Length: 275
Image (cartoon, rainbow, N blue to C red; front, side):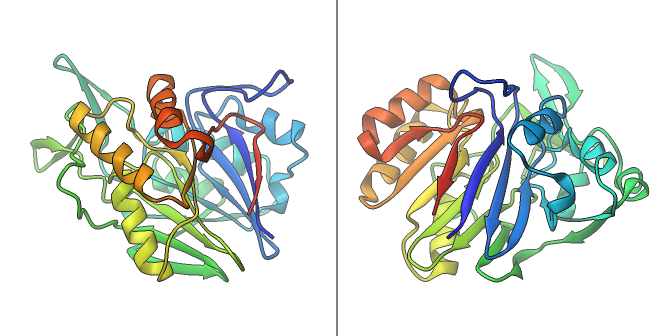
């Protein structure tokens, strides 16, 4: 059996000493391996790990979903809490320029530190390009192919290359496919490549349907046409359950619940899922 524990999310699932913050971090236990997927912004990570009884020294690796501060902000604290260096898996694009543009005002939204700075603190990077299978039953998916025509780049999220500004292509968007004995689950950070594109790639790799999606979907700030099309696709997969939070947003989470019924639930810090 595999277990997913939500360490960081925007909301706390119930009244508890756990902390919520804008960000995401998920602890995955699968076939004896312990993997942390993202680190949130950094303030809630270590206190929540302690409250949940999860020791950073037990981790076999850290996996990064993409290069935004609300997913990478806790790397420094995590490395400082360990007694040994930590393998880190991600796409090289994590360290590409990541900016947000709000009415012409641009700000950096990438990792707080450089690759070299993280390495000096104990990070040991392995860069993923397409599919990688570091552990039995776990596949890292990146760069995820863009197959749908309705999942489009977020106009406010940009990058700069050779002085030219363009929508951020998020080649670094990385999802995790977990293949258990009976179920296939997908973990997403923000699904900047499109949650349906992530599903299609996971289904191709798994050779069958995905039973569970856990994480952020970035549908909250997406255009209405993309929201409707993605909801329709999710609803059409009758065996699919979705546990969504973070960048999904509360309004979209409500719409997901209407579309999926009992097949939807909120993410929330402290949520534990056995798969």
